[in-house]
Every structure is written in C-alpha cells, then in structure tokens.
Length: 93
Image (cartoon, rainbow, N blue to C red; front, top):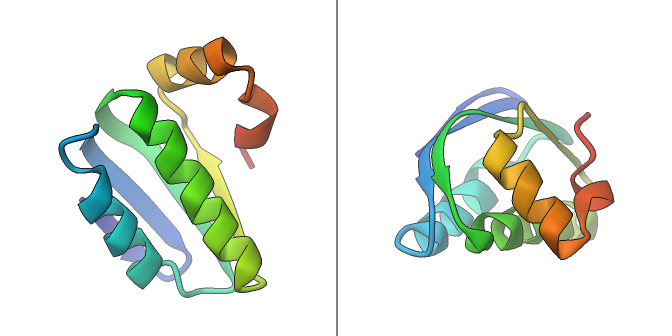
C-alpha cells in the first residue's frame, strides 16, 4: 500500500512477488508531483522484486522529467542491493 501527501509518499507492508505488480501500478498513478520522496520505513518484507520496483519507478520518473528519491530503506533491501551490486542506484535522498 502507498499513502501520499503531496510529494511525500510512504510505502507500507510487504514488497514481494505477490504484490509488486499492483504496487507498480499504484505508484505510477500516485507519483505525479515534480519531486516525490518515497519513505520505505514501514516496509515489512522484501524480495528481489522490490529492487525492480524501485528501479521501474525511477525510470518512469526520469521519462516524465520528474525526480524520485527513496528514504529509510530497510536493511534487508540494502543487503539485496549490495548483493546485486546496485547500491549506488538507490542513493537515499
């Protein structure tokens, strides 16, 4: 689930293969501000599809000439990013 208040959005609950498609569509619909910050502090579970989701949102933002930043990344997501060698692509901002 994603809750937004202007350009500040909070991603909540699990981000796994079971719900990543729905989250992708929800994010693409909600992230319409010129600058969006997605807070992941309330994410409870991730798998590798979570990385794909964040990259997809970033690609969509760039294509629409918008900026998206991710903050409060869970440690398990940071570990996956390190494992895949993509840590620098998730710069917290």
